[in-house]
Amino acid sequence: MSLKHELERLLGKFGQDTQRIEDSVLIGCSEQHQAWFALDLRLNSPSSINASLQKLEMEAELKGSFTELRKALFKLNIKDASLLSTAWALLRWHDNHKFCSRSGQPTKKNMAGSKRVCPSNKIIYYPQMAPVVITLVSDGTRCLLARQSSFPEGMYSALAGFCDIGESLEEAVRREVAEEVGLEVESLQYSASQHWPFPSSSLMIACHAVVKPGQTEIQVNTRELEAAAWFSLDEVATALRRKGPYAQEQDGTFPFWLPPKLAIAHQLIKEWVEKQSFSSPSA
View (cartoon, rainbow, N blue to C red):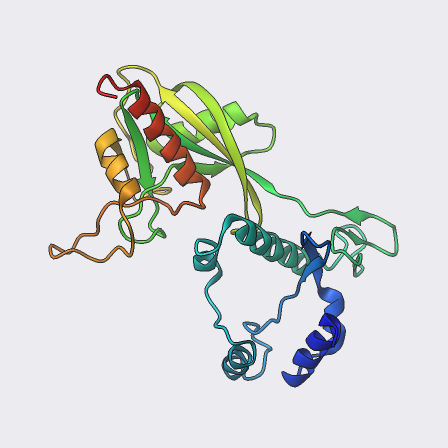
């Protein structure tokens, strides 16, 4: 039985229209040159009848279990996580761009899912990513980490924010650091980039930034952040070595920990620790 027929069988078994296969999107290709497609089963849709029951039946059929997507990304290897990230972003983009912004008419997806076209005026829509700067700020011997209220308890990360229209990368970094912690950046250096599918497909542009000497007093923007603080090399290096899960301690607090390895923030922090350790007199 071909993969297509197997998918049609599964969709039919769970009461879904087999024509929905046409909604699938191309997300990559195997080393054996087999095309990989992704399809949203819409089991979380409000219109999905008996969604919980369908999930249980599908888990039994496929001998697996559904996992919250953010958690899944950090459990997979880099290649599989990238495929899952691409699938989520593409499927969400198509779901949100079903109509032409000029004519109001329904748009049509091409077979691969790389674009949508308005049949009435031939306008082509391509998936886009929003640029986001993520910046690890340092004063030379310490790095600045912050947390939002939505973060898991105890987790701190680098500063991040969307680029505004008309801004350069450098301008966005300086503005975000000034807005979120009230510090002025003296110099910055590009590190790497990463696609991130949440909330709606972003290109994370990672940078290291150094603040002006003597200007290290943090003024936390409580509308953006829950907390921000300077951390020493030892504190950060210890957190990098710490293994999860991160349970609440006896005094009611949570240990200081960092984003998982797959996150570009983790890579930024690791780079800083390695650079500091290499330049340290005791190294």
